[in-house]
Image (cartoon, rainbow, N blue to C red):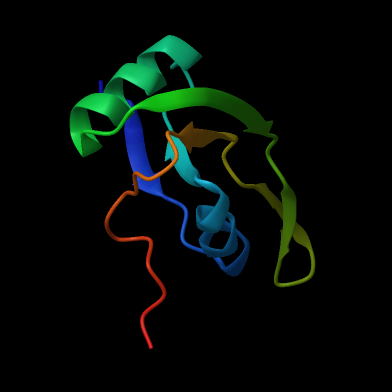
Length: 93
């Protein structure tokens, strides 16, 4: 079971990296301790805090009359030690 699915790359998540916070899409069955250990092992940084947000399934209309739902997912906001950074979250100009 993979704990970290992918990093969330958006304008808001890139701006939060200045404060040492990184956002990841994680497995829905994982907890804070598993996420903390996975981030520390994968990126070799010291994690100070992990916050979790559960996103509910959203209902969508397909061609105006058929209803469908997106899958629920879990987002982790990881705060790391000051002075460290995770590669891949930089703004490329």
